[in-house]
Amino acid sequence: MRSKKSLQVDLIGLYLDRPGLVAGVDEAGRGPLAGPVVAAAVILDDLAPIKGLRDSKVLTERARERLFDEIRARALCCSIAQASVAEIDALNILQATLLAMRRAVDGLRLRPHKVLVDGNRLPPLSMAAEAIVKGDSKVAAISAASILAKVHRDRLCLELHAQHPQYGFATHKGYPTAAHLAALREHGACVQHRRSFAPVRAVLAAAP
Image (cartoon, rainbow, N blue to C red; front, side, top):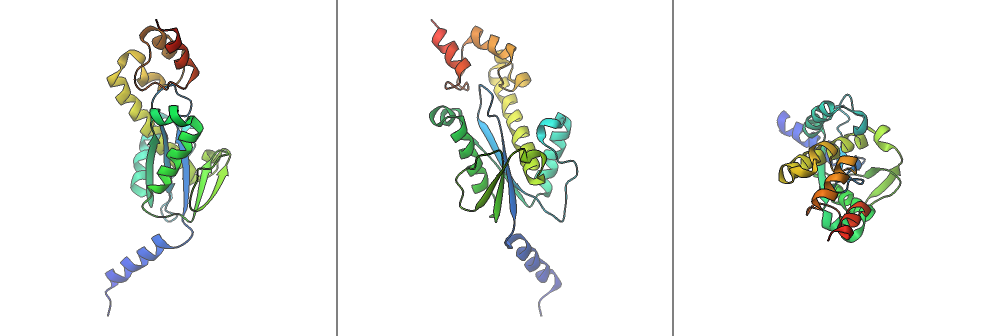
């Protein structure tokens, strides 16, 4: 006779592998002039809902950090991936973003039955997928993915700031603020600046 514990393990396995798991996917970092573009994929546990999931852009930094840890702890599975600056410059930012999204989905421990992607474009995937405009404010799994991608990329920008403090990455996170553009003109581009983006190209072209 099988033990109760063994039966529970089998039931959990059936639950995790059953058809119908849905992953949410979102990205962070399409607009900045420097650093990778980051994507995340999340499959939430319907039996353990997470309160407070929203589009990462409307949350405070403190709330994002708290939810980042909670999502990592309570989601059925999640994955964070990126496309490098070299890939962005070689492919263009749209194709690099789709590449990062595909990598995030491929990195999931469980295979989703369907993938819901924020926006209006889909990466090439081997399962059913749907693009949802403003999905990060409509679908909890996409909201969770937006939070993971945003927090992870912000942390990368802090590392980038430590390496190149003259640009102020800790503050503007690579976006083309007046301070960032001024630093670009003064110091030139660093290795993590996207050469294919017009403001960086302009600085390089103007260099003696």
